[in-house]
Image 1 (cartoon, rainbow, N blue to C red):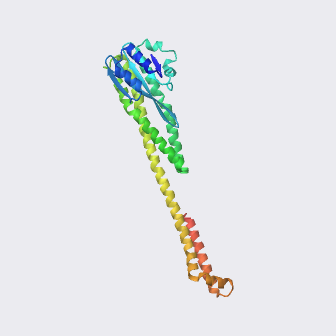
Image 2 (image 1 turned 180 degrees about the horizontal axis):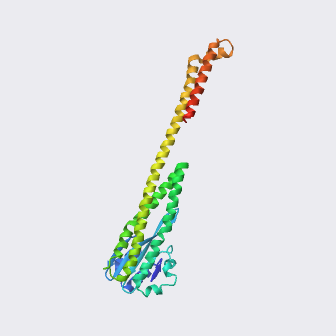
Image 3 (image 1 turned 180 degrees about the vertical axis):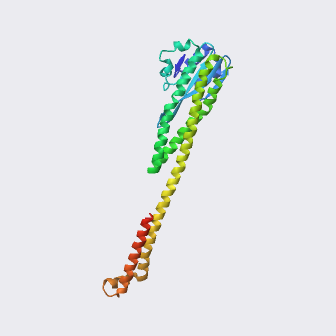
Length: 285
């Protein structure tokens, strides 16, 4: 039984029909759970999350209730179980092997859908690393923190969900046939692989932040070097103006000043140009 955006009355009616515990019905209705696996009476309540990536990571809660002879799924319209590759020929062939096998098919499709999201995150990290070197501006910083928020959102889902899939490989879990445990172990292996990729992405983003801060500091040092070089060049001109003053300059331009004034002026200008050339050569200006 699959419920898409059910009303409270419909959820309560289905819970009564299937004999679900009131707390299970309440959790399904609230839809603010974390990934978990609970044994309640004769039912297994599993909460998993689908993720999508549209500028940022979006998560969607999906409730599974497994009984001896039924499987209940509850979700919003953003997730469609019928897009799972195992359901291309319908749910009948899967249900012939038991509702636990159908739950495996849905969980397998749910986890497989994580890989395209991780691929997009990897592309975003690669682009971010290039932008940090070429243009470490405000937009780059916003993208960097956006990726960090996305990874934090994924961590809230991945960490507990991996443990849930590990519990599904327990042969003593009710309503899961022993010969189906190996299928759930495959889902767990995929979850472990994704967790390893997540750790590498988190390290790359943290490293990108360090590189960004280093790049900003290097740019600041370059600006300070250039300002220092300009100050050194202008210091000579300032000294010349301070020594001779405007009165001497006026007399010089009126040709009433000795040639020594012009010799000192030429020396000051020549020295300033020499300093400028030296600073330019060592990339201080």
